[in-house]
Image 1 (cartoon, rainbow, N blue to C red):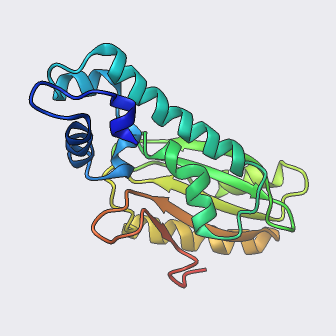
Image 2: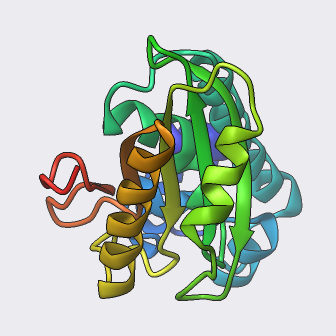
Image 3: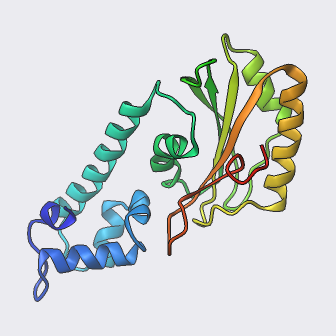
Length: 202
């Protein structure tokens, strides 16, 4: 598909070969999320502005279509959460924390960004997240989502501690912490996310 978008390759290189090189430079499909026309032109000399923009626009269009299809849908598994939030958060070069607010049927009511941090950490307290939930109507459950710009979704000790404190705080105020999902990049057989619920912490 990437080869079709490119249409033609570069001197001595077919469109399919060029597409394979672009994918390899991003370690697969997940790494395409942050690609820009400027990056493509810098890394692949001879690639024109029109082709570079066409590829970046197609990736962004695909992301928006996917989000539109999922918005308002069931958030009853980390796979669905990853489908909703992964394409957007993989583009970020800083950690961000988002909260998905769900009704009793675990359908998405709204999503809220609660923090934006540095390359490897973000400062947010459980109280801030619970305050958002208590200030909204009909919220039964929460899913917390944040990204690791490094691409490795494995939780840090701080992530584990934060999740434990948020789980305990949610119980106190009568809100269900459905999951905490860390978004990374699928690589070498590793999933592109980490779910605290799947791991048995919730």
